[in-house]
Image (cartoon, rainbow, N blue to C red):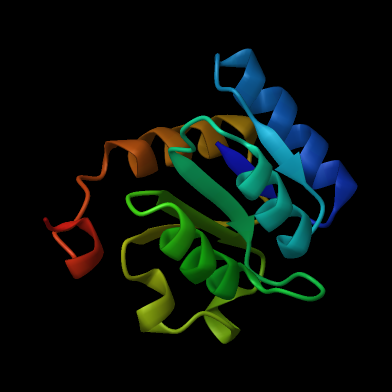
Length: 126
């Protein structure tokens, strides 16, 4: 999975919590860095776990760009104040996790996101 989180403490907590559960995590401190990591990584990225509010590219825009680059990627948006920033359209094919979160809540949300069936959007047909 690809993690984009600008707060180092939250990023480290997420990495440690997820790697302890056996997930492979590519971590980025910004949306721009996440796009670079995704472009350079040749393997499959099953999930984008991104903060909603970051400097530069925001989480929903990053999700849209990642879906264009990697059709079929699932998205988990996390934010402490997402209700003010996230529109219903941003949550299409995405799950939201409120911050602060316990490591167990993060792992549960990641598993739930990975278990969501992929929609039959135009990008995934054919």
